[in-house]
Structures are given as C-alpha cells and as structure tokens.
Length: 269
Image (cartoon, rainbow, N blue to C red; front, side, top):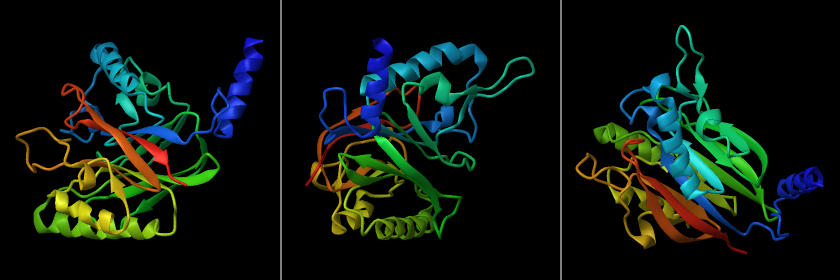
C-alpha cells in the first residue's frame, strides 16, 4: 500500500498537483549566491574531506529551514569537495541538495555556474543562453516549468560585476537582453546575483512590467555584507505574472559571502 501511495504522489506531482489534490498557485522561491564553497574568494571549492560532515550539515540546515519549492543558485560548484589521491570527489548535489528531485545545472566558467533545483513542479525543458556582451563568460539558465497548467520560465543568472564603466555597460546590455528574451512570456521568475552598482539599475525591470522581492516597491534588502563594496542590494527575485509576498533573508556568513533571499510568489490570472 505504501508503494502504491508513493507512486500516486509522484504521478500527481508530475502534473503539478500536490498530495491534497490542489494545484500549485503559490510557491516559495529562493535565490542564493552560494559562493562556490569558497566564500566567494576562489573559482574552486576550498572545502576538504575533513570538514565535509560539518559543512554539509550546516548547508542542509539552512536550505531545509528555507524549504523553497524552487531554489536558484549562482556561483554553484558541482563539486563540494575535490578528489584527493585516496578519496573520491564529493558532488554537491548528493551532499546537500538531495532533497530536491529535479536539478538543472549549467556549465561552470571559473566561479560562474548557474543552477535551478525544484520539487513537485513539472520541468518541461532547459536552455542556456550566453550574453552578447560580457567581461567574463556570463549566461542565463532557463528552466521551463508547468505550474497549474501554465508555462513558467525560471531564470538563474549572474551578471558582470561592478568593474567600473565596463561592468556597468555590460550589465545594461545583459539586462536589456534578458528583458527582451521574455517579453512575450506571461509568467517569468528571474533569480540571481545582478551585481548592481546601484539599485537604480533595477529600474529597467520595473519599466518592463516586472515586480521585485528586492528594491522596487518593497524597498531595499541588503544581500551583500555591510561594509563591502559596492554597497548595494545585489541579489533579487524579479517576476512577471506573480504577486510577491513574505520576502525574507537567511544568512550564515560561514557558508557564503552573500545572503539568501526568498519570497512567496502567487500566480496571477
């Protein structure tokens, strides 16, 4: 009987229906620059086998406390611990993200790797799009999902950082490209580290009809450590076709140099 019940739950989830029979119209989404397990200070993980158990428990505790239906990670490293002469590598997917049934992981360019993890929402496809203008290799990962019968585009991205005029010019192009890419889509969820030099850079999204978890109508939420440069709300969840509520942050400075941002999203008719 338990096996039959489990199989039925899987089938229901595949069609976007939870165990109580209601469809997903409200979801929790989280976005986090996870710092490639090096606190953002290296292009590769700095964790070793000796600290694996302690760090795995800490990451799991944070992510489980958030309990997001959709989790977007940037500066994600597919390997949490590298291989040694006598021990194999440890995959981050298995070590800290096994609670998520579905995973879409983009290519890794130095510290740039975008990923989307989800539970109970049908995934229809995934695509990777490189930006036309960039200082380093930058792209956005697009996961197409089916939510309550409607197609939703879920984006995970990491724009160029604040490298003076060059970085700002690249970001301006990247923001316009990502707005243009989804101009005909009704439901869009964009997550990532936008690397804004000032919150005003988000204004292009507001003008294009998007709402935000950070900046915009809800004020500024610090998602980059105080005292750091630039002093701006770098991380954001930017949406079209959804109402944003219950915005919050979760922080553990021992795990990343960024603060996770989360929000409840209710799909609009």
